[in-house]
Amino acid sequence: MRNNKRGGKVIMSNCPFKHFLALQRLYIPFRMAFSAPPEQLGRLQIFFPAPPEQFVGPKFFLRRLRSSRKSSKFFFRRLRNRLEAPDFFSGASGTVWRPQIFFPAPPEQSGGPKFFLRRLRNSLEAPNFFYGASGTVGKAPFFFSGASPIAFIPLILALLIALLTGCGRGRAGEPAGGGADSWPLFRGDAGLSGYSDARLPDKPALLWAYKSGARTVSSPVIYKRTAYFSDRRGRIYGIDAEGKQSFDYDFATAVEATPMISDSVLYIGRIDGFMTALSLSGELLWSFETMGQISASPNIGVFRGQEAVVFGSYDNYLYCLNKSSGEEISRFESGYYINGAVAVQGSGFFSGGCDAWLRILNGETGRVSDSLMLDTYIPASPAISGRDCYIADHSGNVYALTVEAGRISSHRKVVEATSESASFVSVPALSSSAVYIIGDDRYLYALDRKTGEQLWRYLQKGSSGESSPLVCRDRIICCTKSGVISIVDARSGSLLWEYDTGEQIVASPAVIRDRFYILTAKGTLFCFGNQSD
Image (cartoon, rainbow, N blue to C red; front, side):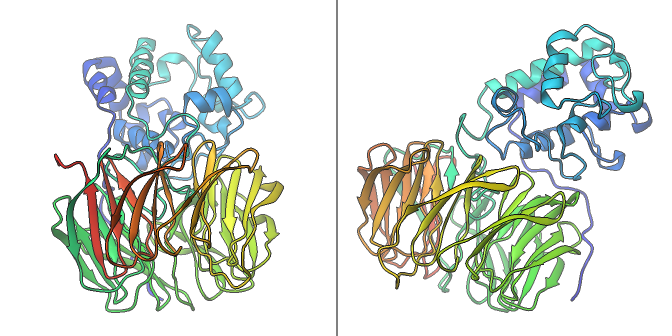
């Protein structure tokens, strides 16, 4: 095993909060609020929790604000409907888990978000608006590095304008998806929900097709409008928005997994058992060796206070590695291979194994908090939105679980397998009201999430394969193994558009603003969008 320390500065992705930045430039007090040296901050890092060496002013805050929006229950919805949510600001440093840290007060005085709302409603004029733990924040003038209390007003105005001008990732009630120009991991978000708030073109046109000429079972991921995928020989491709190759790296060993990209670093598992971090400048940052092949995409979560890359291996272990260094934080043994990706929701890590067990790990305690045995083994990944988790076993049975505080409070089978000899590896896709599932009988099913009632079904033009459906607002993208791409109305199940690639498809779609990408098993990447593009 070899581990190479990752160096260099953090590369920040493009931030959509233009109005926030505009106000930040307009208000001198606001600028001063973030520009003071650490010793004059008045414990600003308690409000934006991170060690002082990681605190870099507005960019850090915007990065935190943007990353925390991976949960669609952000800010107003969270304050209004999800006051109990423990991961309101789960920062990169891992220093924030409980609401009382974000809403600074001595633990005995803090009631979490409700405490904050009470202060916000009653104490805006009070000099002790945010009275921090042990008096570290103290008076309002110290809330932002000694600036006048009026410096707080631009921050509130900026946040309100940024949120109300539509720079969010999802509508209220919807799972989170990739950003406007990124779909950085398998299924788009940490919960693997398969939902995107991107709007599909009314009449999609083929913009370009890139032929790599190599077999692949990878799904594409998108980072800053460049698509990345691997072939089975271990070559990583980056194809820009014009269909030209802009990135190329060869591991010279077999790869089947879908990559994940975070902070301009690509993480990918290999058949030889290594999980590798590769910068998009082509530098190999670190590699971690397991004793079995890695077939699924990694994910990112906070585990025991550290930002961790999480994945399963065919050596029967689920691994948590430090994202920056690649050092092992912890591992958990299952009864057999782990083939699917790990879904992450708050402090919960959800993993299905080929021993037929679905396990939930608690990222705070580092222990298994609950588990459920299904009818047969689980080769695919779970999909999570809010308290609901959906997962399918190999025979095609699909299960709905309700999870509260890391425990399974209820579960039921919402789809019965039609054959014991079926081979089912598709992942459900979730909207706020429905779950969409490709059955082994060629049908795409829409089920009501509350009742489990079938809303409609659509017969695909070809056999079901490994490709999973994807929800884009009011439309569903699905692909058959025989190569037919279909867009279906999410409300009625009626066919809106289709395209025959002429090549087998086992990958899942990727979607960004005004575009979607399909990768075939022959290594052809299709890009569809508006003809005007």
